Length: 210
Image 1 (tube, rainbow, N blue to C red):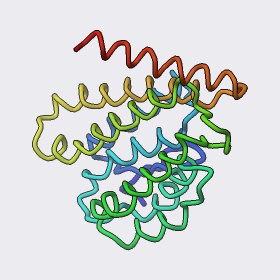
Image 2: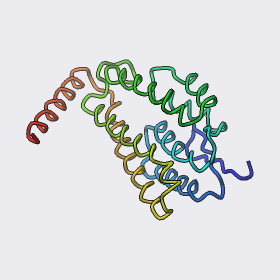
Image 3: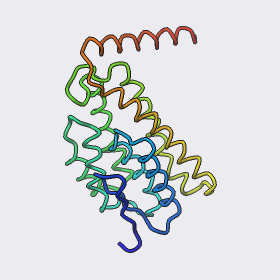
């Protein structure tokens, strides 16, 4: 472990990065600053994003085994109330990381969020009210940004890394705000009013655009 650093600012998850790798040092700096500045409620997604973008610099086909437990635990929290830890921890160790993402993580995430749309994280109908769709929109934007990371690391000059990490940083900030609003403890009537109102505003905006 002498060539690696165990970062403690992302508890309960474990972030272990290469000590002398510029890409990893920048990730640690952005991640730690994000934790201090925004104090995110959605710690699981924050970890999944920053640990995920760290992968290319390890120069390996499989996700680092010393972070596999934390990665699976973060997905399990992110996809509650569904228990997905055993699926993730098994296949992230078994598969090439990219195969794992497309064959396991992505389908499971789509299923979990489809169910969350109706029942949220606490088995409450339309738990997210008006904010679940913005929350999911920012979620998929984050996914797109993180999937771009192998190309950023391999082909983009170092001067572009800071803008790339900044785009992730601020998208995460928006995402965490939407998440906070989506998991508020509000009544069923308020959830229904918010959701119907959001659908109406979205439809009216669409009509104006066309």
